[in-house]
Length: 196
Image 1 (cartoon, helix red, strand yellow):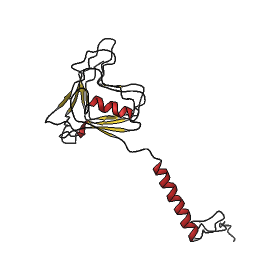
Image 2 (cartoon, one colour; image 1 turned 135 degrees about the vertical axis):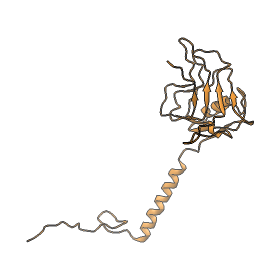
Image 3 (cartoon, one colour; image 1 turned 180 degrees about the vertical axis):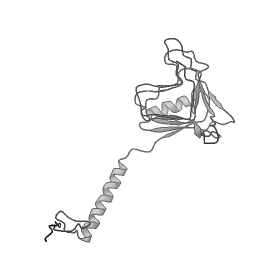
Image 4 (cartoon, one colour; image 1 turned 60 degrees about the vertical axis):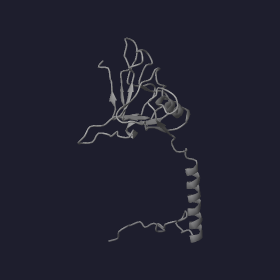
């Protein structure tokens, strides 16, 4: 009894040319060298690392303010990060006098970077020490705590308490508004959400 089996003309050989013949060692080294150069060139073409903007004051505006950090992140193309290092113990309250700027470029805003803040665990609640309060603003259209606008897709907001942005009939007044963007990560915040 005869069994028909097919065997390839050449067994597979690592580092082989088309047709199955192996490359010589010098050619293999040249190929590996070219691949290394190509990888290095592509890595050099990658965008620069994210800029980090640190909020160092609870002031409404000016250097070191959240407003200035948002404006700076909007002006810097690509994903950026806003961290907090406001001096003093306890909750640091930021009370804008005019609506905060709309975020128009991807950014990670991380309230947990404020010293003393902590994310929730299985055994303890979160400690939020950055508060964004709309108490000094009139309610109405465009008066939101944080607005993630067009161009900000892929942003994240975490570790903030955002509240008291008044909602008036026909107006907005949300703690957080997603406007023409998506793919965000919103986690570990205390948001004053209207019951409607």
